[in-house]
Length: 218
Image 1 (cartoon, rainbow, N blue to C red):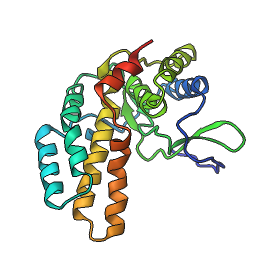
Image 2 (cartoon, rainbow, N blue to C red):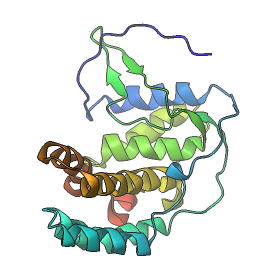
Image 3 (cartoon, helix red, strand yellow):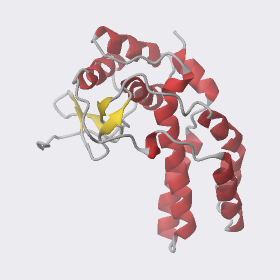
Image 4 (cartoon, rainbow, N blue to C red):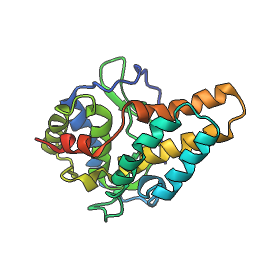
């Protein structure tokens, strides 16, 4: 059952207070509910090197303006996918989509998470890593503050190793793949521009192994 209410929200922002953010996510994860909505490949499986090669070839053939930028990142994308495939440390119902669009400041000053359409089982540690990717990549020094606040508030997860970033890696790479697929089948300039935006969100702020190491640093 889902109970809905109205909330007056501010625009998405990736500079939310790190202590408040860590405590808030811990509160979500302290709800010990296994649930019945199972794992989803979108959050766990790689795109694969073969598929990336196929995508880049198709984009080049159609003269996509971002084809070369994406191609230069493919080795990093494939390397990141090497972190996928390990067993989760814990599984419980998680939001699975805690990007800035869905976790915002309210007009009265609090935080609100909404859009539970993708809710299902996941590893809380990997969802915490997703939060670090969204809210600390422009300033990795925020990551240990978020992690510490999360732990102090009793959060059951913990981001300790690159494999803990499996869920955001899988999500981001699938978002890029889907943006490319939609660009290739688009029939109008407006649709192509919209789907290029999906891809450029990653191209402009890419997740890399080096960044993951920075987010893991104390």
